Length: 597
Image 1 (cartoon, rainbow, N blue to C red):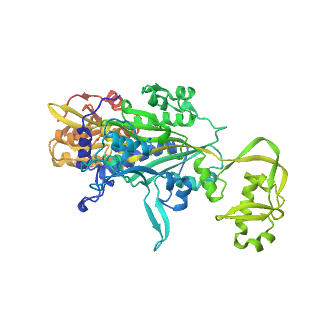
Image 2: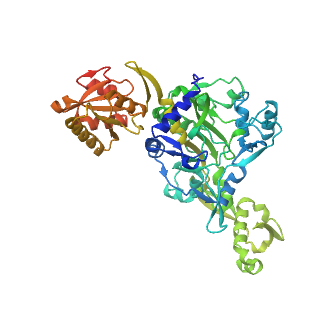
Image 3: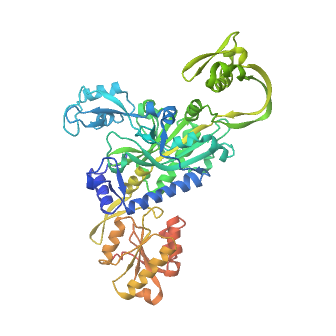
């Protein structure tokens, strides 16, 4: 178990974020609305950089496609996907003050139950009574208060007036599943293939909390990976063979001990039952730690049966330790064929890809050739729908045609009888080269807002430099909003002009740099340290003589002297991970230790 941080640690990070332009509550002049936040200049850049790193690893790095689908979908999409019925949380409303709360969170807040999300409503109601839960806003007892299901989707109207009912998407995934057939064509109908998407989602959270950790408008980065389970296996050579911390169901229900294993062993031992889920756990672990997530505060917890989403056969959450508890950062779900099957049933589309047989097969197939000259006059405009239903019935239940009178079909909610002789039913012997296969889906899904907050909290440090307290963010160069600060040692015409020239040169090279000449040099270092800037470049009088500058590294505060001609290339290599400050220091002519203004 990680060492528990102080209760004020979260407050310190949020205070820094607001003061230094990472994020702040939206619409504050109008009183604000819980669950909505604005990313400031530094936060928007940090968020963009994290999204770019995700895209590089999970889209480009894995060879997958990327799309950008609408954020509003018509009601039938979510009726088919199950979200209208199952995308719910448990709500308890205080009869005294009228405030609504997530009932499972109220139970967890007592400290007596570690994870209440997977419990039933009946169990939550009993715990609220037994634990004497009170309203956190007014203190009123919530014993005997009814707990109900609350659908988290935002409802809207599409078009003027009442229009067509629609919903803001709670996940980006349905935009991929709905258009699977077209996307499969772009992938040349070759499994496996993946489709990624980074975009906004909307969840009408009952009780938004903890700044950007639980919000009502969020950004997600999701990959839907389509596989043929009989043929496709992951290449584990692409996965770091180091150990990850696993917390499977058996441990949660038993000894509550975490398992420290490499993912290949975890798959071989059946702890992770889906090899592709294991593959993406390994990829995710490496990517998160490279991003700045503390590996000592990172684990993968398997969902208990009662808490799995309606679409998931299995799911593991990447969880991080924030403050004093574990928080979900990403979910790695085995969605099976659930989504494609539901959309196939709702639309009549196949949602399959063609899989060739090793050798052609001769098989018997139930076929229909509906007599439209009979169906048209008898059933009118419903004749085409009846013909489609007959084809579906022949493929799924050919025994339904084993009758001397009529075949029963369901069309538009009505039960109709079609004369068997009008169906054109027959059993044909055909030679087939392959068959349609409905792929299974494995989904790594990341909450980008939570990633932003986590890297801020995990990178937040306090120390002392030359007797002065310092707060700094140890952000990796690849995601830091500003890569380098550029300073003249003193404010003078010559030094300021030369520093401005270096700033413009680095900016033209595509590097994120900031110029600062206010205050003493030590104070300028502190300002850049606090916003996570990895490097500072100081122009001094020696620069005017030999065209060299000092490059200071944030974490160690060490400084080295470099030629300005090599500065852009060195900073680019540091940002992109091709070298480290230790590498650059080893190549430099001189090292100045402890020089910090």
